[in-house]
Length: 305
Length: 305
Image (cartoon, rainbow over all chains, first blue to last red; front, side, top):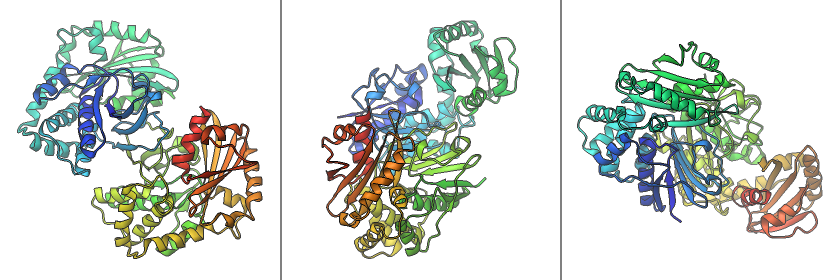
């Protein structure tokens, strides 16, 4: 049976490109595999796919009975329907270890680096498989996206080295110019609904028994969001109303290197507990905070304990 | 802070040697590390340590506040006291993915191979670190032990290749003779208490909310155990009485390639459900069954569902 390689809910560029790359690598290793996705690509991901002539993976919403590789997550809350009836053959990730468990031994490649695609670059090298030029371009962009062009505190030397090597394979001469082009696409809010924007990069977490949603929008300049901020707040209020303890939306300014966090919570005091800063009204500015994974989730997990 | 590298409860040769090797590799990668163990080495492991001039890791029983690398397991039930207050930096394993979770991104190397030490051999290669001669000997023996000299269904080509390469580094000319020597040591029951024998290679599992203990004794000839079988049965009855749903003890004949399983259970019917064979009295012969991980645990997990 062909194994499905799929990233998390509300797939970002890392989730989509990782699925494409691990499917390619597995097929070349003799493990029949196919990329899937839990949703349509974001504008940023579409830009990357088009730039390098890659095809968006098929959207799959129920994986019961399938053989699976998970990429870019290991939390059940981010898994597709039917994951309990699927057989997980492997995981490639760069996040904390979540609550996925398996009945059988499996292959796991998880490293504390800025992007799953950095791990995948090394997997290709490890298995002695050549990286196709178009996939190298995709991997490169995913790393630039996840590390916010190396500015995120999640970025490691391994990410930078991977980008350097991938740029050569993909024939990209100016990596930073490509990154800015991509982030400008990502910053665009025209034509997107409030729901689209909130869920563009959104994850639910179980924090000490509380369902907590955290979304993130990264823009090259926060002023881009001035006109939509009220609408975003209304939308996260609606999302919280679906049975969540809190919903937080990070509006990250990648040039200023910080985030404004919009807050809807049953207990807004957790924000001060987590970050040592009192919210003003419905939001708080968190200087230097760019990474949900490394700077936001761990702080909230402690605050919820 | 120096990170502790430790295997599972009731450490076997793989757990002890993996801890020694990953600590060595980490130190050479610039990550300060020290091997630990949740208990004293078994007679088999002592033989291996002495054969190659390695030192048994210090026994550590509480890891609260420590930085940790877990080797050869990812189940909380097999973790030391205080694991909830430790920071897990990495996992090296070859089992199913257990219920360990983390708050931070970490390094995980898990492969579906016969022994954690096979993964570690590749980690040395990946990081370009030379394997010391004595550690190569230890890794080699651990793989022979876990794969029952390549006879276990868990054994893969990767395990055989690793042994071949390690034998060259360690200067071992006759791998199979070394394996038989080791398994004869393992088979010896003289001087060991019933408790020692039951816990020599014993693990607790959470199966659908039921605490289930499964131990295994591997011998070169089952007749070695004739005199102790009644004592072993009494001992697992006592262990079950500590609040377990079931305790199973596999008496594995590595030459006949099968196991007699001693059974104490609140619901002995799970055995027939799991293996399609009705126990005769207190035990059942399971032909071809040599691997707890691959042939016993998954069957029981299904039967308990």
